[in-house]
Structure formats: C-alpha cells, structure tokens
Length: 177
Ligand SMILES: C[S@@+](CC[C@H](N)C(=O)[O-])C[C@H]1O[C@@H](n2cnc3c(N)ncnc32)[C@H](O)[C@@H]1O
Image (cartoon, rainbow, N blue to C red; front, side, top):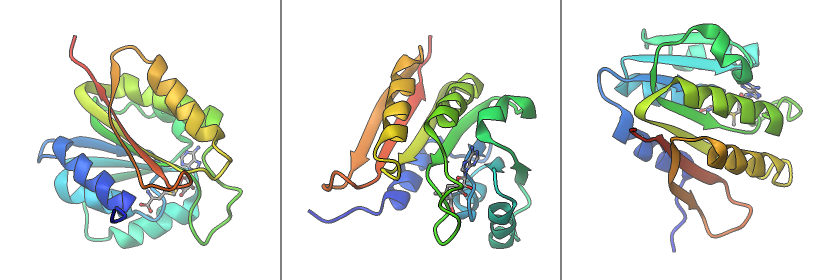
C-alpha cells in the first residue's frame, strides 16, 4: 500500500473544520507549515511555540498572512491567553527538524495542553494530533490516555502508515451534549 504523507493527511482532515469563520489554534507552530495552511482557510489562527527561533521562521513563512496571532508560550499554559472558543486545535508534536532536539514536546505538558485545549473547543470542534515515537512512546501513551480520559471527547479517526515507528495521526471531536 502507498505511504501517506501524514502532514498532508492532517491538513485533509482539518478541512472538515475550516471555513471563513473558523478560529484555529496551532499549538506547536514550529516553522509554520501547519499555521500557513490554517491561515489560508480560517478567520483567525493563534500560533504557539515555546521557541522564538521557531516563531521567527513561521513569521517569515507566513509573511503575507494577516490573520495569525503569534505567542511564545508553552502550550500547557494556553489557558493564560484568554482565547475565544476554538473550532480546531492542531498539535504536531516532537521537535523542530534541523534544530535542538532537546527542545521537544513532553508527555506531562502535552497532556495538560490537550486537557486545556479540549476545554477551549466548541462543541463539534476537534483536536488533530500528530504524535511520533521520539521518546520511545511515552508521549504517545500520554496522548492516548489523556484523550480517553476527557468526557465529551471522542476519538473519531486515527491513521498510521504500516511501520510501527510511523507517526500516528489522531482526530478527537468534542461531542454535542
Ligand atoms: C514537530 S515541530 C512542529 C512543526 C510545525 N507544526 C510546522 O508545521 O512546521 C514541534 C514544535 O513544538 C514546539 N514545542 C515543544 N514543546 C512545546 C511546548 N511545551 N509548547 C509549545 N510548543 C512546543 C517545538 O519548539 C517545535 O517547534
């Protein structure tokens, strides 16, 4: 079977939540690949990253986009930003390629960020999470455990290419009452 590019698939799934009124959060902005995609389809995109280097690269990539608000912030502190209700939150976990691999997402803070992002989601809104095995699976375990522990959140889709080491893409939707 042909291999699917996981970022492309994440963008394809994201389209279900993207329209001219969408408020989106990129919780791991990195160099702005996902932010740029979201910006083209949403009303407003909040872009968070812990690293200034990443945000500067994203700002360059998205120089023509006027609907992005950048914050250098640990996503586990997302509740301190007073964001409006969100339609879509993307997490592309791990570290910036070609950068310091020590600056990476971590199980504990990722779990908190997912819990807080789920609270900010509108009913019918979604989390899209791409998780890697950069730490022998600890973060992926934390992601799954956290998603399964949140009431009103349903894991609706998942995809991984055939190798066990491939990234896992998860969609979790905040269900209506
Ligand atoms: C795989 S990269 C993201 C790629 C990005 N979405 C793109 O399209 O280029 C993961 C990013 O998460 C960031 N990161 C790590 N820990 C974080 C945290 N606690 N809060 C927010 N961002 C974090 C890293 O700095 C890195 O830029």
